[in-house]
Length: 589
Image (cartoon, rainbow, N blue to C red):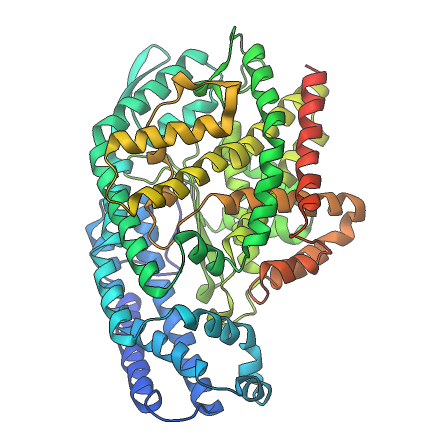
C-alpha cells in the first residue's frame, strides 16, 4: 500500500505551467491589492463598494497564496533538503510581505468607520464576512502603520521563519546509532521518539539515551533558533501593544484568560490522579521505585505484533463509521486519494501534520508510521483536522480560519472515537490495554503539555532579559517537568533536551502550541460524553458545531453545545472522566 502522498492536484511539479501561472497570478493580485489601497485608504469615508472590492481581491489572493505556499511547505515537510521548495517558500513569503501593509491599512481604515454595522447590514457579501470584519476591528488595536508592517513581514522571512527552517532541517537530518534486534541501526530523532512506544524495554531505554546524545550535538544550533524566534516575537508583540506573547495567542485563539484560568486550575487539581497512574505504571513495568521517563509511554502487557498501514486504515475507517458515515468516507477518501505521507525517512519532520488546502477542497497529512499502536492515534488525530476543514468547504477563504484550541478539539475527538471503538470491540484483556493507552495519551496532552506550557511562560520571561544558553534552557525544562510530574517519575531520568522535541517552539507565529491541546482533549471529552447520551443524532449536531468554528469565538461556540467554558466545574467534569478511567485501570490491574 502506497504510504506517500500525491500533490498533483496542487501542482504536478515545480516546473509545471500551472504553478507558473499561479505565481504570475499571485503577482497580479498583489498589484491589484496595492492599487486598491492607493485608491481607497487615503480617501475619507468608508463605503460598502470599497470593502466588497477589497474582500473579493483578498479572497482571490489568499486562495492562490495558500496553494503555492502549501506546495512548498508540504514538500519541505517530507524532504527538508529540497532546494526548489525552499526557494519557492522564500519567494512567496518575500513577495507577499508587500501585502502586510495593505492588510494593516485596511484594518486601520475600517476602524475609523463609526457605522460599520450599518454598512454590513446593507450588503449580503459583507454580511457573509461579518465575523471576519469584526475580528479585524478587534485586531486593529494591535496594528502598526503600513510601512512598519511591511518591514516586519520582510524581515521575518530572513529572521524567525529562517530560524524555523534551520531547526527543521537540523532536527530532521540528525541521525543516531541504536541497537535494534541485535543490530546497530541509524535512526532519525523521529524514529527514536517512536521507540518510546515499543514493547522492548531495553530498546526504549537505548533509544531514549540515543536521542539525548543526538540532541546534545545539535543543542547549540537549536538554542540559537529558539532564541531568535522568541526574541523576535517579544519585540514585535511589544511594539504592537500586547502585554505578553500569551495575550497575543489568546487573542488569536478567540479565547479569553478566564477560560484558560478555569481550565488550568482544574488541571492542576487533577495532577495527583495522574501521579497515581504513573506510580502504578512503574510497578507494572517492574520498577522498584519511580517510573523512569523513558518508560512514560511504554505499553503495558505482553509483546504485541506490529500494525500494518493497511490494518491501521481499516481500523480507523471502521471506527469512524461507528460515529458517522460522512466521517468514515472522508477518511477513506484521504487514504484512497493519497492525501497521507506516512513513510518514515530521514529528512522528514518528526511530527504529525495536517495542512488544509481549501481552494482545492483537500488536505494533506504527514506522519511517521512505524507500526506502533500510537500511530493509529496520530493518523486519527490528523484525519480529524481534515474532517474539520471539510465542514467549512462552503466558506470563502477569509472565513476558513478557526482557533487552534477548537482545531485540537476536532482532532482529539477523532482519536477518542477510535480508542472507544477499539475498546468496545476488543476482548477484556485487550480492552484493558487500550484503556491504559488512552490514559497515557491523556497524560501526554495534559501533564506533559502543562510542563511545556510552564516552560514557555518562563522562557519568555527570561528571554526578555537576554538569550538563554543551552544549559539554562535545559535547567528550565527539567524544572517545569518536575513541577508537572511531581514525585511520580524518577526526575534524574529526564533528559534535559526535551525543549528540542516540540516543533511548536520553533514555529514563528505559533507560540504556546501546548495549552490548546489540553483544551482540545478536555473539551472533546465533554462533547464525547454528550455523544454517549444522545447517540447517532449527535453526529449532525457535531458537524454543525464544526461548521460554526470559523464564525464564533470560543465562549459563544461552546454555548452552542450548552457548555460554559468559564465554569471550572465543566473542566472538572471532563477531568473526572479521565480520573474514573485511571481508577478503573488501577482497580482491575
